[in-house]
Length: 423
Ligand code: GLA
Image 1 (cartoon, rainbow, N blue to C red):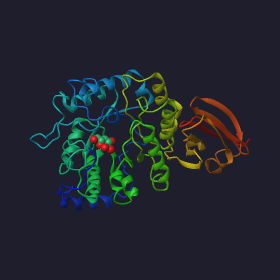
Image 2: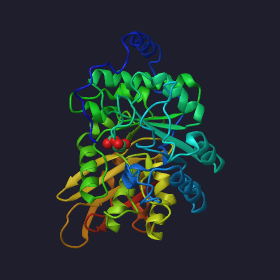
Image 3: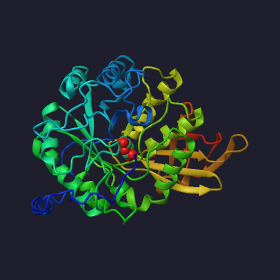
Image 4: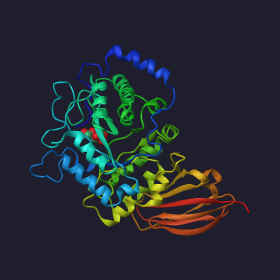
């Protein structure tokens, strides 16, 4: 199912259209200006939990079908997800019929989606939610369904006609990296041309990295968010790798993030099988620090109250959704302790201490507050609240003091620092 980059000989963008694309690129030098994703997208995406399960006969509750999404929409409303901010219900790969219709349009699998995507979109909208869909820039999707190559305009218009609100555009089965880049740009143009507001979620840099350094300035002009690194798995190793990749490349990627344009470290897997409680806290806290889209992939019909409370934690979501829209970064790494911080609006800062030592008990770690938030977060003093694992007001800290915490192995302690004005 992984991308195949060789093989196909056709270009991803017909040559004639390239001229139009280049012209458009010149005319629209600013950031992707579709007015969407001013804060990181929040919602649910089926891939990590349900993958390409098309076996509705034997697993009717877990196969990719209209029913799965309708039920998830119901629960998103009844169980507080929508109220917490999770708005986009997103379909990933494997929703399509194996062939386009006689007019060249994509169609949903008729057995698994008997009402087609329009009926599902209506249902999702009637619940006050938005619908996301998946397609691919190349000749096939990663799971082998029809790709959008040669059909970008038709597909963009089809999605708009159906009432789709977000497109995740994957990068499998494209014959060259240049054609992949052109295809991503072309689809951005095609979506804009439809006049419908459609969040554009790209995997462009992920597929470019094996060949060269992606041009993030350009990516940010065309996409609302973009995947940089390998698919998330339901495991601590996977979360750790994503965090390591992000901190190693932070110089490259954090500056381009901002309202309308986000780095996407992939789905939240909280509430599944593979992460301990502390590891789930780490994912939630660090996805907030990274200003990441919060796209859960879990079974909302069957999730523990603890995982639900973590995913719906208002204070963490407020950090993630902070309107300043600046992505946080790793400030320091000492032995197995990592310190991350993120500037927030109103001169506040979020701070996370992560313990990556997978041995022993909780580690005590202290940091002088004058080293936080570029030296200004606590000058002359600040009020510090611990947000995770549990909320606790810690009081006022003078800039000469230090902040200490005990951090569980593979866990995180998340704080909010709010400056106290000089009297
Ligand atoms: C790629 C993407 C995943 C998912 C699958 C679907 O691997 O990175 O997020 O969309 O394809 O096949």
